[in-house]
Image (cartoon, rainbow, N blue to C red):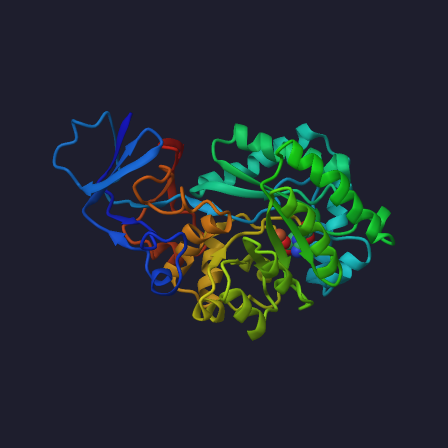
Length: 412
Ligand code: NIG
Ligand code: FE
């Protein structure tokens, strides 16, 4: 079927001159078209044409007069399958406890691990579907979701099966990431080697065998995995064909970023405490710097050096990091405002960081993340004729239509 996305006020193509990511000048512009409409053939963008006077030739016409059309947002870092909540710990944080103190006393990630181990696959799926729907209502058409709250063979595979199911039932693309190296579960607290063996000898082979994850992630931090421990996990994951990601430089600089780069990780996420040295090495690589303003807000500490990273030439993406402990935030417009106000990124940087560059952080920007012929017909439609309203209307969702593979999957 041929569909015409007719007469939007503007199209933010977020095309980076044919490249797979935007940096430098490309990062500073969303490549805006006016007077244009988009032709979709089935699920693929066929062409961008001058808005025609007559539309009878098209089987299906979606009138976008007065609206702003842009690529569907790519949410490239979430932990959205979990059970329970961490409200008590959030209150402790407001009263002065730090994330690391709570983790050291047995809480934090392990609080959620306990809840997940006690939850059924069905319970996890039900709550996760509602969360994915929140993202779809904001114009998200591809979402990455990590495991990492099971930390046993059965419970990690349970989470990954839920993530796979989400991809089948939610109507958007789901990228699955195995995060067994999130923290050491209580039963392996004093035997790290045994837990790493469990990951490398049991979990990873089974996950690869069942094709349950595309990426392998880890948390490289004083309170979690050392660079040497991450290397063991990465060696096995890479040999099984998984692409690599790493949570690193969130609280301490312990060499995690250099490890991620050495292994050719597709992204290094967090970087709140990165200094010049880290900014330099990531800028010289194709590893995407995935920055997470929600964490800095939720934990009330430093924001990642976004402007320094972009000026040095790193590929910068943004994401919610939605999770129960460090960023219980699904509101992308709010985080976009933080990225502009607190990180100093421009409006155009932020939109590119949530579209083309986020797609590159999932190595999917060859087929999504920008409005270009040949890519998937994935779009967000904003109810404004001026995209800057997204930032001016702090935390307001202006998305009124989400189009996935050429079909309307959400309409306000
Ligand atoms: O991205 N840093 C480690 N992992 C998550 C937090 C997970 C949690 O606290 O539940 C993050 O911030
Ligand atoms: Fe995270």
